[in-house]
Image (cartoon, rainbow, N blue to C red; front, side, top):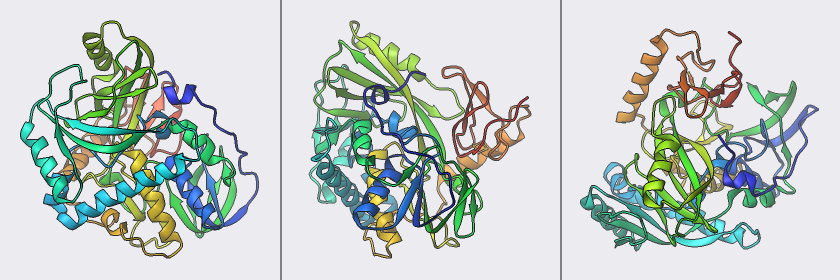
Amino acid sequence: MSKSLWMVSAELPHFKSLEDNIKTDVLIIGGGMCGLLCAHFLQKAGMDYILVEADRIASGVTGNTTAKITSQHGLMYDKLIKSYGIEKAQMYLESNQKALEEYKNICQMIDCDFEEKDAYTYSVRDRRAIEDEVRAVNALGFGATFAEPKELPFKTLGAVCFSGQAQFHPIKFVAELAKGLNIYEKTFVREIAPHGVFANGKKIQAKKVIVATHFPFINKHGSYFLKLYQHRSYVSAFNKAPILSGMYVDEDKKGLSFRSYGNLLLIGGGSHRTGKQGGTWREVNQRAREFYPDAVLQNEWAAQDCMSLDGIPYIGRYSKNTPDLYVATGFNKWGMTAAMTAAMILCDMVQDKQNEFAPVYSPDRSILKPQLFVNGFESAINLLTPTTRRCPHLGCALKWNKAEHSWDCPCHGSRFSEEGKLLDGPATGDLPKV
Ligand code: FES
């Protein structure tokens, strides 16, 4: 897999690794967008904190996103109203709009190719679903419109349009945001201890700990291995393709997404549950060739997303029994706004301040959702599958990913290189030698 367009077109600052025992009030584990935004807000609030990152900052999902900043998360709101009622749906929408506004504020001071754009979720199979979503969003007091996109290379049955959303260059953003923050890179937390953690053989004593590691790696609390699964999707950037004025996503999980960056067109798709088969870049590039025969492929990369049971992220106390441990995960492919929402909520929580949006995202909510049974079934099947290549997280059988030459786990989505080096958690170590 080549590096993402973002990773090859911006430089990240370097930070030293932890070499001594240290004490802090708030420890943030994970230097992706969410962890860095937490650090930014805690620094602004004058709090004592440090952030530790196992590798380099933004080296995980943040560097591989499509970097859309929007409160439109597919066809979310009609479902949300039906499952949680109008008030919670309204809070979800408001919190995401607030996240968008906060990006607008910060991006005034950071040169990161921030552009306001309209966001569209389209359908090629179900006009009714689009109409229902437009109605639902309007019932929440937000002016979504029904649109018939003209710049897509195929006919749709309509789209929900949210105006005034945004896109940016996430690595240019992070590179500036991180400057001056208290960060240790190459500092891998593998173990939680009473009142702190161990990393690089050193103890970090902390009164409060925020786990912002994409997939939470502590299995003992919170049952995140039941509440989450991971999904891979594939992005290709093309030259000599039309420039689109909007950002587009199919309401069908198997569909395509589109956005432009400069003179490039980014097309995403080929998605599948991590550890399963999917269309990968093969499908994305084939569709692109059909639509735009003159387009020239410039970069391709893949994204890994944590999916929650109900489409809402888990942000708040890690579990009922861990009052000083906090988590942000399950961003469901909408990591930019979710990271900002999480950072705003968690920074209030660690300062013992009320946050009006926190109840919507509470990780304690009911897990009795159909996806729970799918996750349980996948785990049972893959735990019982006989093979020598097993995942060090909880022991599932690993599957070979032909497109990316990696060993992937269908249970919770850990990934390893051909040589067995850890690529993606929740596993915290390499594969044993065979
Ligand atoms: Fe959990 Fe592999 S990621 S068993």
